[in-house]
Image (spheres, one colour):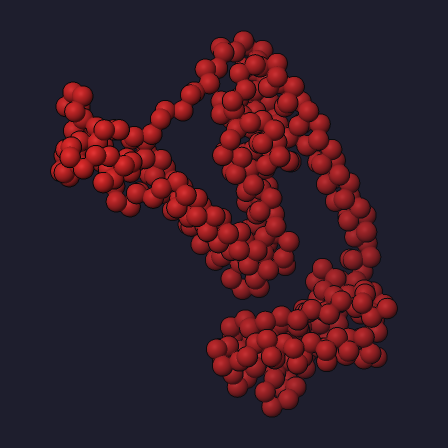
Length: 343
């Protein structure tokens, strides 16, 4: 039989587990070595390590998916992020409970005894870590902090969600920046406390190497930002044209394009011209979205590249976006046509 307490195989003829001393008959669990009470493992935490790794992978895939959806959602981005944070909260709660409830019957890990730091060393681990902030996951592996390395994937994953243009992208940027600041502030101290490195000179050498690469990444990011800002004059000019064009068009909107489609409004921002259409006779559930998109896509791209009235957009390399909503006002899908592809 298998012990309900530690999960190991034990004799069928005894009342107590030969591995952990737990009772095999249920009820209060006592240790045969001296009557000491042993904590029973709650049913909700009786997953073995393999099963729990499946849970971890599923949770992180879901969270990453939610962040990507949030960054690219036009209506529900913030909602996706809130849901992902709640999911992470539940996961952390379960992770802590699982670890606390599965200590019984397992061998104690050999804990690295850290040397007492000098005042100078104490000050060093409190300094800013470019490695933790800018190359978190790589830095974490290099610092030998074990499974805690997963935590330092957060910054990159959140910024992946910020690549879209939806309302969730702003939330993603804010959360991502805050996380990177926290990583940079507490990175060295966290690494020293959690890593398997006990030689401070070796620890310092690794941190300084990682800081060099982290600082290089930061400088590259700043240069890219400057390049984008220096090119902002043309974008500002384009946005002025787009805003004026959208205002002129909106004066005669909404209007029916055909018996099933209504053009409600237009918007020009960030070198992108956005059309808002409504399928007046359909709810989202009644539409074959992929079929409709595949029908509209070639017509839209052809029109963008050949319509004389859109020449000003083509000359200024404007991105054209066509957002479609159903009769209830729910977002259905979006089609993009980049005028750069017309040349």
